[in-house]
Amino acid sequence: MIDKTSLWIVIILLGLGSFGLRFVFTGLIGDRPLPAWMLRHLRYTAVAVLPGLVAPLVVWPAATDGTLDAPRMAAALMTLAVGYFTRNVILAIVLGALTLYGGLALLG
Amino acid sequence: MPRQTTKSIYWQGVRDGAPFILVIVPFSVLFGVVATEAGLNVLETMGFSVLVIAGAAQFTALQLLSDGAPTAIALISALAVNLRMAMYSASLTPYIGGASLGQRALAAYFTVDQSYACAIVKFEANPGWSIPQRLSYFFGVVTAICPLWYVFTLVGALVGTSIPQGLALDFALPITFLAMIAPMLRTPAHLAAAFVSVTMSLIFAFLPYNLGLLIAGVAGMMVGAQVEVTRERRIAPPTGDAS
Image (cartoon, rainbow over all chains, first blue to last red):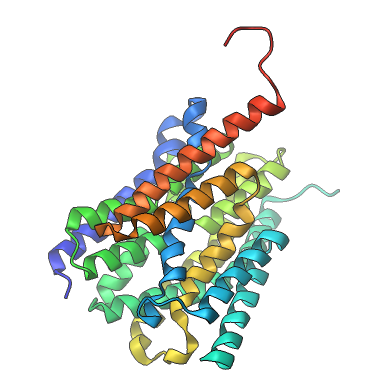
């Protein structure tokens, strides 16, 4: 059971902090230029954080108690491949989900 | 080509945002369900979705709190997941930096992966747009997705555990993220950053409190930046001046 005080501390500070991150450049920097090295690192934030967030969920899914699961792995690879080659987010989700349900129906 | 009105640009934003309903609805329902299962009441669950309005960070904070991580670790890890918002903010600044403070604050609150992704593509393609037109487009995209984030978080919190296991909703999160990540892998530098991120997060998965993700994130950013520098030198070697 999560302690209610810590919960609200996290909700409120995470809300303020997230707003701060979203506002830091548009709000405070305005149109002043940023150092090139900083922009260069910031360009890769999304591709450096999100894959690391997802990888353990794909390799050790909670739904199978952390054991590698063929339908989920196949769905992840399908989503990645379709998204990469078509650049179509929706198509990638749909084909990934179909692969997951197909795999679960066949092997589940 | 007829001159675009601000109103038609707003509706263009709504249309471009609409496909993301497929991402937002399952994701927000999932958050409502997971939060309820973790013992949060409706007010607490909605507090997350309204105040934080960032799926991955909400899941991260909730997961760590459920695991009994210290409050500061849960907070810092979730903020780390949201660091990309600073990049979005930096990237939007040349386009909407001249708007009023109130408008910039409102746009900042609604800066999410989908609104940013739609906006930056259109802003680059339409350099002639005025700041009000850019804001209209941005808030059009927001109109299509953000209210649904609140509504379907509530739906998830209310239906709670009644979602059948067979739907395998646990995997909606990896699939939606992978679908969002894949088109971002445009250059060898992006691919290298993602590869390092995956490798490091798996290697350091044993670390408590999601610290492995922080290592993976920092390592991925450094590798991406380094590959970019290396490739630029190879493509355009430095001229005359000794730098």
